[in-house]
Image 1 (cartoon, rainbow, N blue to C red):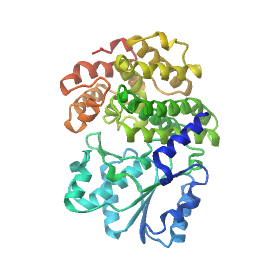
Image 2 (cartoon, rainbow, N blue to C red):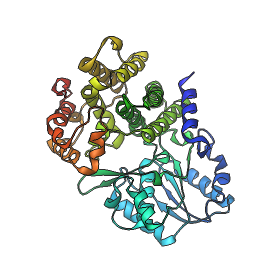
Image 3 (cartoon, rainbow, N blue to C red):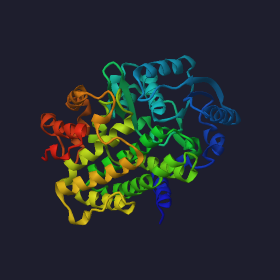
Image 4 (cartoon, rainbow, N blue to C red):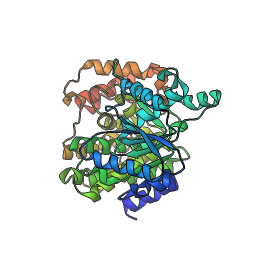
Length: 422
C-alpha cells in the first residue's frame, strides 16, 4: 500500500467522518455546521490568498443560516498571551454560540485557550497541565462553545488535538493545556490552501509533524499502543522525507502539499494516542529564537542518541526509511545502543543538509548560553514534569543537569560524543 493510502486509512481510523481533508474539503462546510449554532465568530489568520478562503467560509456560514457576528484577527506565531487575552475579550463581547477558526496551529491554539478563559475565568495558568479544563468545567457545571477548526498550514495539527500551547513573551517560555475538552468539534483542511507557502513555513511545519510522530513513537516503546504508533510514525516520516524536498523545489506541487498535509495530520494522530518528550520540552524554551517546529526538529537527533538504548526497534525501522531515500547507508539492523542512535541522528542530519535546515543551535542567529540555562530551568518546572516522565528514558528534576545539560551542549556544537548515556 502506498504511503498516502496508508495515511488515509489511519486518518479514517482516527477521526471517522468528523474530519474532512484534501482538495475540496470545504465544499461541504455549510452542511456540516448547520444546526451547530446560530451566531458565530470567525477568528482568522491573514496571509497571501487568505481573503478568498475567508470569504468562502463566510458564505458557507450564511448558507447554513448562521449569522457571522464578528471577524476577529488572529494572533502571532507561538500563541502569545497578549493575543490570547485580546481574542478572549473580543469573543466575550459578542457572546457567540459557535466558534470558527481559520489559520495555522497557533491561531487554533489561541481560540481553544480563549474559550477556556471566557467560559471559566481565572488565569490561564490555572489550566496548564493535563485535564485541568475538564475538572474546572465539571465543577462549574459548564461546557465550552462548539469550535470548528479550519487548518491553513501543514504543521502542528492543532485542528485535531487536545493541545493548546501558549507563550509568555515576557519570559520566553511556552506552556500547554492538555485536555480532551479543547478538541475542536469538527475539523477541515483543504491542502490547496498550503500551495505556495513559503519555504521556512513549509520546512518547519513538515518537520514539526515528524517530531510529533517520532517522539510519540519513542515514548510508546514497550507499551500496548506501540504497533499503532509505529504505523503512524513510519507513514508520516516517510511522507515528509519523500515530499518535503519536492515541495521546496516546487511550491505549487499539489501532490507534495498533499503528502505533507497527510504527514502532519498523522502527527496530530500521534499526539492524541501518546505524548511528546525531549524535543518538545526544549522547544518551549526557544520560542523567541526559533519556531516551534524548527526547535523540535533541530533537537530530536540529539535526543535520539540519548534515547537509543530504549528505542532500538523503532530506530532500526526509522533508519530503514531514511536509507530508502538515500540519506544513510548504515546497516541499522546490525547496530545497537549509542552507535545505532548516532547512525539515526546522522540520517536525520542528511535530510537537513539536503533542504538547508540548521544542524546545531550554534548556527542560529541570536543563540547564546542563556537559552541552555532557560531550558534546564524550565525542565525542572513541575508543570512540565509530564515531558520528563514521558521520555523513553524517564528523568526526574535531579536528572536534568547531568543528562539534559550534555544533550543541549551537543546541540549547540554538533558534537554527539558530548551526550552522556544513562
